[in-house]
Image (tube, rainbow, N blue to C red):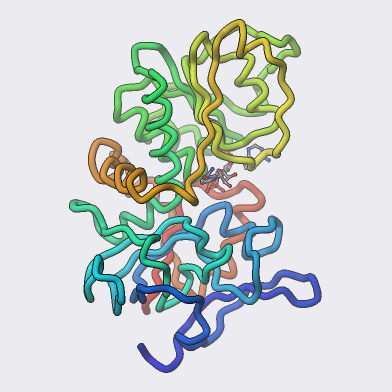
Length: 331
Ligand SMILES: NC(=O)c1ccc[n+]([C@@H]2O[C@H](COP(=O)([O-])OP(=O)(O)OC[C@H]3O[C@@H](n4cnc5c(N)ncnc54)[C@H](OP(=O)(O)O)[C@@H]3O)[C@@H](O)[C@H]2O)c1
């Protein structure tokens, strides 16, 4: 490892959260058994919250940002990994308590590391990142709870975002009839091109006030929370599943018990950060297999270099980004 290398570090300066590129040494990184020569990372909504301080993500400062990373094992004191192995890390406390993936070299606990599944590249893995991983978990949980394409349409909210785009693509690939809710008028063609059969503009939604509205959706993947999630609980068909992933529109959930006891609907929580190695392995196998996005290249909206990172976060906070941003970590 060179004596110093580039990293995007987040500081707390008198209560103000600021991220910037700086040269750091390996010794400055949090402890771990595996050092990775990093190739790619990605940008998630949570990365934008962490880098700007708009959400409390980092638990200590300074900390290297980036909740995901993929690259080559450089050194490992854990026998499961050898120099040169292609590996991927998503979640697992990166950019929270461990230094994260926005650096040329990354050091992580071995239990966080997954061998790159056969058939996908390091860049593909980071195009997927936590967004694709969370979409995969949502689908896995819904299917475990008896979601089937023949039950009817599944609605995806926050549709143009990373999780939303992958959820649409993967569900369509499995044979589901997918509807999408978006705030972006300009994204109708994009959403249809990645698999949505119906696209609904958020501003045109009539949510109603009743504890139970007309049941329309056999299931839903929700990235937004707040009023939209509350409306979903009132409009999902009997025994349908709602995978609850995100909070882009708020953390509140105001509903009643009626959808649960009269329609038997299910809220399924999605937690992608602290999953068991066994479950993580299963999801990565599916991401490289039956869930591999048909339109992965169309969902990657841009690639940026490490030094361009500071410019990307604001768009996420404003809900303006479509698809996924890949970050190339080596010049
Ligand atoms: N539970 C987990 O483990 C897990 C894992 C990954 C992500 N997440 C969460 O899932 C959400 C999506 O993550 P992401 O990385 O896909 O984010 P993203 O790429 O930034 O996408 C979020 C999308 O939500 C919509 N949106 C933004 N602001 C909104 C608002 N005020 N009201 C309604 N919709 C709004 C926008 O899509 P449209 O314009 O198309 O509506 C936006 O593109 C985030 O809240 C993230 O924290 C959770």
